[in-house]
Image (tube, rainbow, N blue to C red; front, top):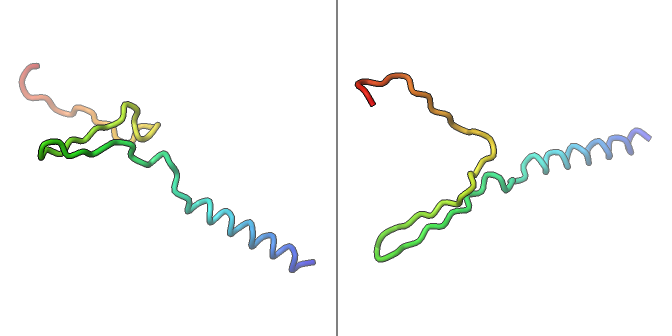
Length: 66
């Protein structure tokens, strides 16, 4: 009886480990890089790569007037 429970526990741990190591599609870049007349052209998609904000910039100092 104990051996059966240990096998199930081992199976569940292995499945969780496999899912944790899985590569998700959210982080995949969907742009295109082309070479046109010797110039490298990078085209980014209209939607962002990540749904949530990854980096936020905040102005700390401004010298002069806008």
